[in-house]
Length: 553
Image (cartoon, rainbow, N blue to C red; front, side, top):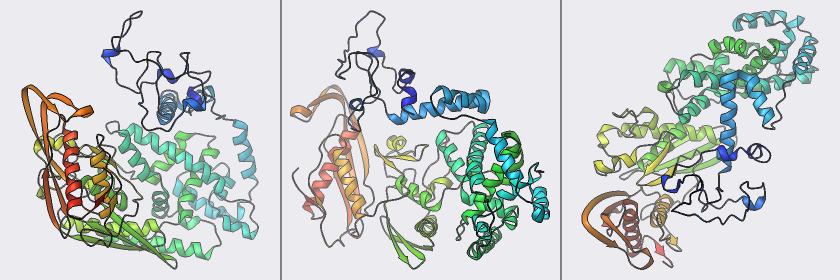
């Protein structure tokens, strides 16, 4: 992707990855009053594709041009722009236009009609007469008559049939159908939900394009009955899953304890691939057939996140950490999730054939416990007056973090599930790392901080990392602002600053089974610096109380 926008095309310069800075704009032939000398080591305007001009250093400032016009740019930004251009051509001119652009960009994406003809000729050699009745019944369920019956026969033939001498199976068609359903459902969501942001579109697609959803559609439309296989183990899996689907529908449960057999999702994808070949790449016809098969397609108001992700995002928004333990016992996995609230330790347990399903079961139990305590999940939150969801229920108060209304705007969950907690960004992680087994005062060993980074954000990071390690709730801040008509001096030495506004923050840390510590930091020129001041005092107070050992400061 990077090379598509480099080299001879030289399209990187058209990417806008930074805000317009009017202070550095100059008319042609004029010099800027705010010079930014070039130290890039390049004499020309174009930067060559060389390893010395690539770095993973996070301290590099991205999007800021020097006086020669050079700027650092994230590789993902370039990749995203390539994908966006391809998407724009697909929206404006269809598949042919998108393929032409990809070819122009140097991406090998040729569409050779002869390959489709070859696939049809190969499938036409499959003897479908013994399965003619089976194929006829399946065609009636699909509401589509195949011109080449061998394609449908191949699409429903499991690899286990090769043990009986069959020379084909659905795997190649499944590979094709996977991509076909992905683009069709993506296009449907893009057209149907123009008012939602890309993050929600991604969540909708993830909920729609996955093996579980396709397997559920196969069982719902009775397509699983036509899968040709000779595996007793697979038969047992399918039977168990069909029963689980029936039970979940009877009890209106959304979470199923039995994993969907991959073969059921695969056969849906392979049928999509077979129809695409049979119609000679007519995507509209494939969607006409599959839209009713996959309906109802999830909508924003019906979207449910996987239980574990839902739990993690909820805990991130409320400032709690989850500790997980997974133990494999034979073919089963036992998962234990511990969630320390301010006043109680919640425990969720789950069992499954793999870590994912076991942790999902445990997360379901924790979500139910939280709901009983009046804490709702992020995807069931109520909508505020501005249309943004509030991550806590009314009985928790207007402010989940105990801050004043003036600070509430900093606590709104961002649309891409990124949560801002007192100015510090925290990403939802679907695989939370294990943390220390200690909590509160029950630790056998006192944690050690080798040093505290005193730069902006450093004390907060150190304190939050300590809370995560000990599974303490994230501390909360309350800030007060003082405005002055005369300049106010802050700090000393190289950190000396002057301003007309002064911020002072009070920090509150709840330590389970110990108590609450409240401290007030020193006045600072901005709110986040006042958070750092309060966090630094809290770290030293924890050291004084024997909760942590601090090395060189």
